[in-house]
Length: 491
Ligand code: GLU
Image 1: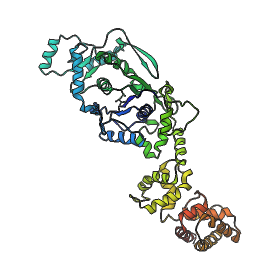
Image 2: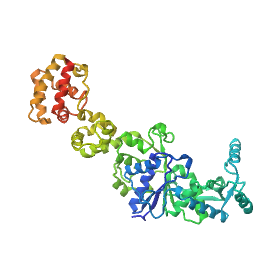
Image 3: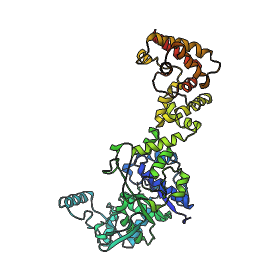
Image 4: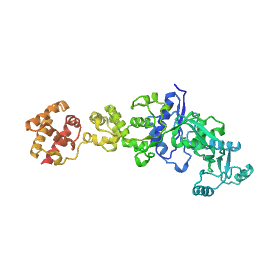
């Protein structure tokens, strides 16, 4: 076993858990579990303007739904807390000031207006290097202190090396080198005392003993800045691993909202199983060592490694996710399928909440018949409806008769079925089959004609599971009621 890792998932609560973030969290969790290390949940809530009130609750809820647990985090605590960055402001402030004292950072008093004008001018001139022009970089210390004493607003900026290059090794991308002159003197601490992402992430990753930083490729441009910050503090950087972005299904461009759901919550609400989404995201960027696609979480822990993560972007295929969902739905026991469908049935008003045991038992009883017909759990109300509702709307006469049957023949079938089904000693598939075939024979009709008429009469539709199982599962009393209603429809 590799050395135990300490990994963190560090979402900003600016929206619901994104599927890209979920994949990062899955890979973090796999590494932690495979090495006997720790998976840490850290909430990067320092961008106050973009906070979404229920995002934190959603992130934790969605991670748990995917089957991920964390060893340290805002809810469970841990030795390196607090795990909400907004509760660590004094730590970032002290670190930023330390860099100022050491001459590695400086106070900048430039106004928003000046910075905006600077940006506009650089854009207009199509400058190669955009960013702060370092006006305050060499302000004498006494002047800066006097300005601070006067209460002038200031940020703390990093003194970026003006020459040289920064090189680091990415576990997935290999060696990456950037010329320092392309990097501007980034802000570390804002004038309201909040840190920027760069400062907070570096300080926390260090103080929390993080050994591996997994994050999306979109953070790659930040990493040279982070490496330079580690050097300024005299710290050893962690190993970085930047995960490939998701492309939209056609492979052209990044996946965006326009191409469908992007939050875990949306997939959950659409009726995907967590096992399916987990397995799908696992393979969206990681190639298993053997030709194989189905992985439980435990199997993924055993098989996963960073070496097999793709360097190049991966196309997101909704069909593949649907395929996984089908595989996992078909693998559920009837009890388990019933349990997964229950909230969807309750939301559709087909069952009360809480659901009495005898009514749940009905769902379990019917579940095996519907397993092949449920692709998403949201299909459950439509599929289970005819088995759970006491009454269904009476079918239209045309539907009952179909293409061939005359009203007289249909009436005769229903009349005969009402008697035969009422008298059947036990109302199950085995007894129903000969009884129905017998009706067809007596009336000189084809078996299929009788079956289809009864199917429509008891379900209101032309497609259901096998007719004998369907009748048995609906139950004698409801079948007789519905057959009688259908007789009234035919007059
Ligand atoms: N807060 C950043 C995000 O929302 C974290 C990036 C990182 O992992 O360093 O993705």
